[in-house]
Amino acid sequence: MNFSLEGKTYVVMGVANRRSIAWGIAQALHNAGARLVFTYANERFEKPVRELADSLDRDDSLFYECDVTDDEAIKQTFTSIKEDVGVIHGLAHCIAFANRDDLNGEFVDTSRDGFLLSQNISAYSLAAVARESKDLMTEGGSIVTLTYLGGERVVQNYNVMGVAKASLDATMKYTANDLGKHGIRVNAISAGPIRTLSAKGVGDFNSILQEIEERAPLRKPVTQEEVGDVAYFLMSDLSRGMTGEILHVDSGFNILG
Ligand code: NDP
Ligand code: N5H
Image (tube, rainbow, N blue to C red):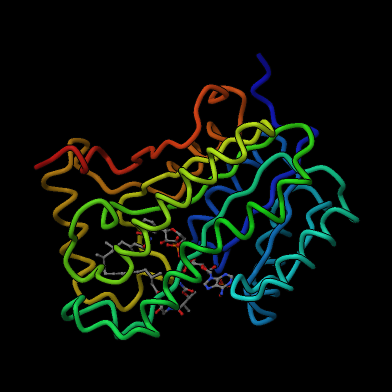
């Protein structure tokens, strides 16, 4: 079997900076020989994404603006990708958002708008990008999204994002069922806590990491590289018998009671 991703092209959505999990995934796919297509939410992030991609030793990466709240933008992005590269072999969806105010206090106080916003960006967007990208995966494909334990059980302060991740997990499974007949697999990685821009400003992030160091079976937090390597596995033929699955890359924390 060929583990190389040479000659294959993957869309990576959600690189904000070098700490992004999406960047860990991009590096793992690049190291396996893949060509990369990057999307970012708005032009503010174009420069940092281009600078990061420039640090890779190939110059055929492509860049598109794609705000996933905008159906036309998603359609346009994949139309452009089709024109520019033709076939793609997979997509990494590394996108989530909730209002900062909704990520502390009580979940029950979440406003209707805050609830719908987090569902829109963090869960519905997976279905939307899967729909618009599937026709580009004519040789089969693999879609990977990022979820968190807070969608399976209550994790303090995760609140509205926990409900959005539960929705994302179900969206992933229903999408896997629809796209399987086209040879497209859809899976999720449930990552342990990693200090990224999204995690910034989370008051007790240090104590969250400390609990991982003290209690997780592997006694250490996971890294972007560790998540990237599992994404590579999911993009490769090694995982060809898997779809609709949630793989925990969390030092084993989820098995604890
Ligand atoms: P980052 O802050 O690096 O990435 C979050 C990304 O979401 C940004 O690149 C941002 O794009 C993108 N985004 C937000 N709104 C939109 C939008 N409307 N359209 C397009 N893109 C949007 O954080 P992470 O790497 O931590 O997050 C990536 C994923 O990993 C998320 O789904 C997160 O929930 C998940 N995850 C993270 C964990 C962690 O501990 N860090 C643990 C488990 C899961 P832009 O920068 O262009 O605005
Ligand atoms: C239990 C926890 C800690 C508390 C909850 C954190 C939840 C974070 C997820 C969301 C996606 C963060 C978020 O939307 C932040 C925004 O309100 C403000 N930030 C931004 O706008 C920046 C500039 C951009 C780049 O961010 C986004 N998202 O667009 C969970 C942690 C232990 C694990 C964790 C951090 C999970 C996760 O899902 O990210």
